[in-house]
Image (cartoon, protein in one colour):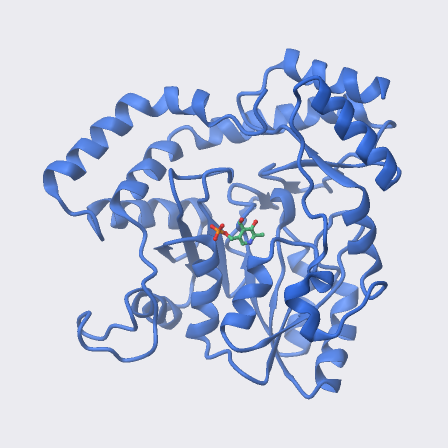
Length: 371
Ligand SMILES: Cc1ncc(COP(=O)(O)O)c(C=O)c1O
């Protein structure tokens, strides 16, 4: 059994994709070919934002807005410690300091009630709080109504880390559109993934769009050889754009399948492990289906029993970022973010992809229920 099955999906798009790739090979425009513009316009209208800037990865999609907004030394950017390292890493790469805010135990997303404490913490450290990076963990958008209220009160802007939530929504509004700017990832295992690295940035702000397009190509001005600002090589390849264009044709159908699978899991597993709770008006993109064991020891037992039956599982995330060696220099300690620490000690993820069938889910649940 696969944790994420990309091969079944490939069969659905194979013919049309090969046709598109052949066109790229014949035209020879491997960088910034017409597929890029076509993809950006489709993604912008899918997310409901004025602009989409495709780029080389989800990490660069987070880094470029920080560079565009002039985030740097002496600035604090607030994010959660219960996320993939890239979310905090880009803050450090921009020269600023990550300041963590614990997550809510119900959603695993940034707890808006705790943002004020993190701002006080940042100020006490002599930093200037500038921005928030909430993460839409496992595919579920964070609580942006409340996060915007607190961000506005402190004059912070929001960069939405939608790396896992492309396709998710709240009140019909799609993930990627909730901040001043949103960043997503097309890493192959993501809900919408390409066949390599890729990402995209969404914004309604015309000036930010212009800056992002410049930063994506070494801070280019009128052309690549006149450089107006410091940038990166952050472009998406034409071939990856072609993959994404084909995958978009089946994406809504896949999202429905993910929802059915999540419902099917939850019906069977609730009462045995902590299952995800999705509040009214929210839709998750179900990048992961993650559950909570009663203890670390019980998690080990369950994961071992599943492994013995050939069922793969993963732990996202075993070590919260404030306890990672790379962030020793921030001076956090065990106990600083109790919800993230508790989740890290008990959480694990079950296989989740649109091609998982009911027999496979029954098999997974049977092992879990008898362990
Ligand atoms: C929450 C989060 N942020 C950022 C990233 C970075 O994306 P990428 O791997 O495309 O650079 C990821 C992906 O792994 C992620 O899960």
